[in-house]
Length: 464
Ligand code: PMP
Image (cartoon, rainbow, N blue to C red):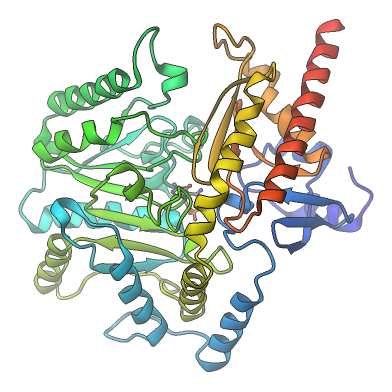
């Protein structure tokens, strides 16, 4: 343990989230004290390039004063108000108006014109689930309630969104998934699950056929919605194979199944377009956004819905006397003011143009490590990438899970001054969108140092 009273208090009182609590008990945590651009510094003064932008979210880095000032101005004017009982406030109205204006086209080119605010990505997806069930009740289809997610998909941590997510460790011992409304299709990781000689397009067609077989087995009249991240983040930064969303969408349409695009990671430029939906030609009925909506300086999420779904909310509200859903802090004025400032900065600084300009250096820089003995695959788009570690490059054989090679690489990168995220043996990268070409070069050098140190440690293990 680190000889520091803050670390001792942390061990004594903090329950860390999504953490190996045993390892934490032995090693303690890295406690981050301050940030500067794409870099953060811990309580012991060590500097790190934050190649995950925290949790895929700090798009403007860790020292954007304009966002602090926007929060302060709003705190002075109106520090809190809600949107219940026919009340509201200007920041949430302006933000809803802005999001509706920049939303990607929905199904059949319809708009996603209506916005419901919450505080987190989990709550946005949880609200989507509730609204989908509500919608089908109101329009007279009470049997159409099942939801389809994907293996390794990640949609949040509430009981419903963890049930929808394809993350076994988030379900085991939590008595999840809840009930029998949660279905799952395969993970579309072409590198890992594509068969010998199968093209990417053929793999996509196989994934689509599996989806259709599931729908037919369960009965389309029982299935309400399909949830997907345009690029799977928490599953390991998995870009969809060519033709995947093109193959899937007509099937959903045929069975009148809603498409919910979880843009919590991809939204606001991560993939090189404003929305992952644009990058992959997705026309959703609902869209969830969070994280880069406020550059993570305030907790805020948004659920965007189409006109027909909104019409059902009006009808249900008429029937029930009220639309019975809401959160105390949903659409908090300080968070909305910070979001408006964030979106203004994106436009003023042409952050999309910047992402497109530096993405080749990012993807090529990581791609250059394909020759490393630990690296099986490097994939990515825009400023999101995943590096898959393998025991044998030719056969793609993975390491045994117990060897924890992903964590070893993550630790060695940390020693080299680089924060990355190991998801099993997939290493994810989502740096702040403001990262420069020079910082990308440094990021790649530190990653190579981390990989080399991990490789040396593995060789030493074998020699024992
Ligand atoms: N959806 C996706 C795609 C996510 O990556 C996450 C969080 N990483 C969530 C939803 C949940 O967001 P939150 O942690 O803000 O609840």
